[in-house]
Length: 188
Image (cartoon, rainbow, N blue to C red):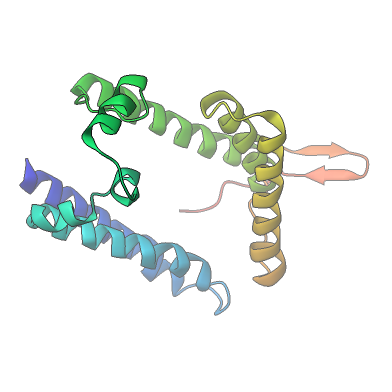
C-alpha cells in the first residue's frame, strides 16, 4: 500500500510540474508569479509527504497536536477531553474516510462548476458563502467578513498588482450597466 501511495504522489508531483512550472513559461514575467507561488509550496509538501511515506519516523515527527503544546496536561485531563469530544481517540473507519473524501471532492467540484459558469469574481464569493454557512456552520457575519477579506485579496493581488483578468464565466449577463461573462471556453 505504501508503494502505491508513493507512486500516486510522484504522479501528482509530475502533474504539478507540468501544469504549473512548464505552463508558467508561456506567461508574462509578472504573471509567472501566480503559478509559482502555488506550485513551489505544494511541491515542497508533496516531496515531504513522499519522504514521510519512505520513512514513517520522519512523518511521526510532523504529527503534532495542540495537546503537545499544552504546558501541564495529565492523562486524566486527556481522558476528560476525549469524553466530551474535544479529542477523538477512536480510529476512523474506511467508510467514514471515503465519505469525508467524497464530501471534500464534491465541494471542490462545486467550486469549479460555479466558477466556470459565473466566473471567478462571482463564483468565489458564492462558493465561500455557501461553504462557510452550510459546511462550516460559521455564523453569517463572520462568513461575510471572511468572504470580503478574501475577495479584497483576490482583487488586489491578482487584478490590481499582477494585472490579470480573471475568468468571467460562460453565462452572459447583460443588464444595462452590468455586462459580465459570455466568454468562450478557454483552450486547454
